[in-house]
Image (cartoon, rainbow, N blue to C red; front, side):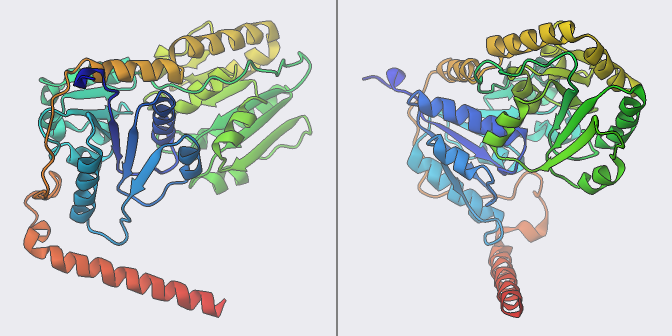
Length: 413
């Protein structure tokens, strides 16, 4: 069997696996690749992994190094050693500066891919790492187009590979024309980007309209207490429910019980929650922002609201309540859109096409790596190699102090 006919091994390196769209996207992609017999490896620079059981269920190997115990140079060395043992044909820097740092050390001949999941230049465009990437993948055409316009990526092959989600069985819920409309927000409860502090205003407008509704807010975050305090109703047929953090199976089940997906963000990439809800046949009422949202939501399958038209969100929901035939048609169109272009199957096909488009070259991984300060920390004297023993000692002492306090608290309790 020749090198070109072997199934490629693909390694994914991420700064963290915290709950969010990027982690769900990684789970969806690696799970689908594993089902096709493609060996994958996920390395995280942080210990937290709330979706560990889901990765395990999909047969995805996840390795991490505890950031509380090891300095970044030692975590980076551990990652590179593991990659050397795994011998991937492709290394994908999934999220965060530390994952991009890995690409500086990947031997020539191995495909180096960066990922950009959001259209926010100051946070997500890893311009300093352009020289160390062969390919940069944006999850929307808008992100890809913006990336191509940046001089730092002039030599980089920039591509769009949309997010993909599992396609559930055909929706069983057929909303009765007289039943309350069931609305859901699914995501992190942050004011930044998500603008969740608009919810009480939208709620007040819905209550004043006299329409019956049930609004579920699914997720957790720093704005949860604010929302619970400011989102109260007085009528039995106008209700707000909070679920807190949910597991993946719980998310799928909950979405299937709703009719409308609400998102009022002022910036996004291509929200996974949007695709998951549309796959279940929910009709999106979303901000009309210049992002991947416009590549998914159109007048056939949802309603886009101008970002500064705050009353427009409630008006769109009221319109759907009063036009149930239109709602039903949009539900079918929303699911068809995701089935056609945004399934995990389509996404995995495109990633494998990307890997196959670059001729693999045998590469030797060094036995030892000369770890340098990150590009962000370059020039800062405290990150000079001479100070690493002191920083390691500091990590050890901090860990011991934390464990001592934890033990003391346990005894007192």
